[in-house]
Image (cartoon, rainbow, N blue to C red; front, top):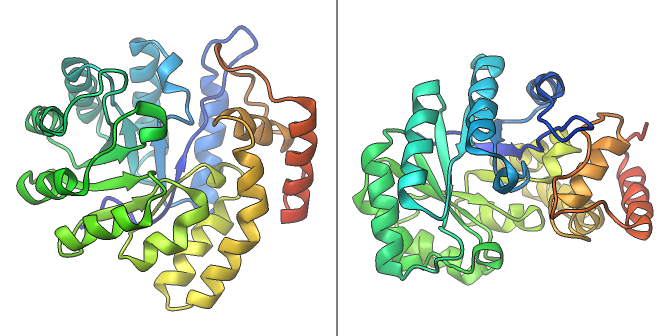
Length: 296
């Protein structure tokens, strides 16, 4: 059984003015998503600025999310690192806190071979006894999970259950599903490709868009699963202008601004990320209004 189906939010991490994690605001965000149709909470992923969190902050956020969600939604923790043993340590700790699953990005910078990549995931899975979703996003990590490697791991390792696919390569996604007989728990890592990946047997999306449009992102998936493919497509296409603006600068710069424009007051970004340009902020705000999102 999949960890979740539908739209999981790749949650932003709110900060105080001094740059520390704002746990009161994180609590509000968790309630917001529990009450507005989100199907799963992904904490400390790319959108959560995990690469700029200390390990202590990282684990505090994960523990806090599990405690405050109170089983209202599945909680998936991003525990990937460029070091296998660091990934193992964080993953084991997250499992102790009670997460429902782990999202583990390919090791960045090292650029392992496919053999090394398989060894990395197998080592983590052996130590961290929770369902694992691999995360393939070569545009950030410089490392793609080949379909054959993904299929081998999903086939041979019981607790490696699926993959978040953000390659943008539909042919690659189709091959993964072919090689696993459609049994991989496939999640779109691109908000503009939710319906295409669902059509290949996907379980849902791990979404940036859900931060600002949780109900609509949920509905794209729910309509598709209910057989209303036309309705799902209409919602997907309606969201394209907004999705484009949410990625007009590197994620999570625009989405952090977007949640602040909605009045959620999640603070700024940690360097080396900097605030969105005035021109992009203006076009982002317009796209949000056009989509029907109320600004503060």
